[in-house]
Image 1 (tube, rainbow, N blue to C red):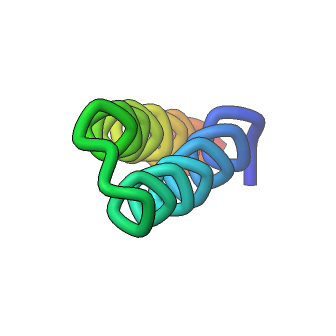
Image 2: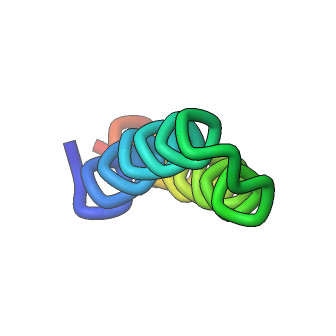
Length: 59
C-alpha cells in the first residue's frame, strides 16, 4: 500500500462518519461535506491503486 491508498481510505471513512453525524443531527450541510470527502477519498485511493499497478508493471 502506498500513501495515496492509505490517505484516501482514511478520508473516505472520515467522510462516512461525517455524513452519518450530519444525518443524526439533521444537518444537511455536514452530510454533503461528508459525501464530498468520501468521493475525494475514493478518488485518491484509486490514484494510489493506479500508482501501485504501474509500479508492479515496471518491476
